[in-house]
Length: 116
Length: 124
Image (cartoon, rainbow over all chains, first blue to last red; front, side, top):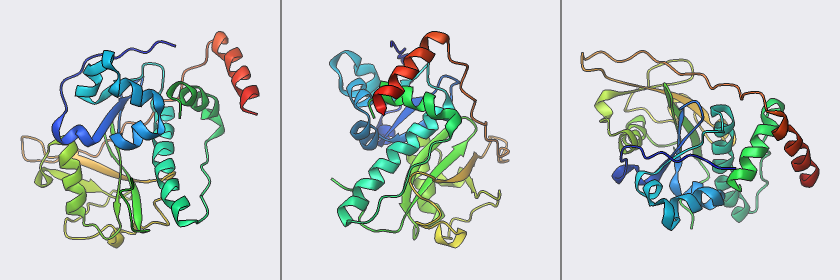
């Protein structure tokens, strides 16, 4: 599955902590860069791969196939995984992560693309 | 590597028009601290920001997130609380709170539908 990666204006500096994920309908989602790279191998590869240094500089990735609703769920999941690690360290029970049925198949496709 | 050591983290989603920022902070953090996080991302100074709770109430800088009812129980990572954000316009007025709703995904083309079935079989 190919994905487009247009070059946007720079948002380095204070932005560097967050990475911007853009959905097919131009909605922007910012998540902490460390979380995104840890829990999505694809995002990590895009940001750190030698052929895609424009993304590494601009901290923006555009997903022309993923809608905003699905991307929101993905971002929620990334944050949820980050929180789960801390909970597991403490040995407590991990809360469930619910996905609405209408989005489930789209979320699965996006998840397999993003490897998260 | 872990950034959080206290159990009282609240997970927030800050929304303004087409932008959504996923972030978290402690429930003892003040609204001003949250605005500083937003400043780091949007480069708009806290003085030109306004944060709104889910009831569209304007949040005061001096209050903490706890004061507005945000705590670890209500704001979990998998279900974060939404906070609205508006900026001050050049006229001195603040923009209206406007959250673009997310779109529904488009209908899957047939080719992808069959791929889906395979994916689900492999997952189970």
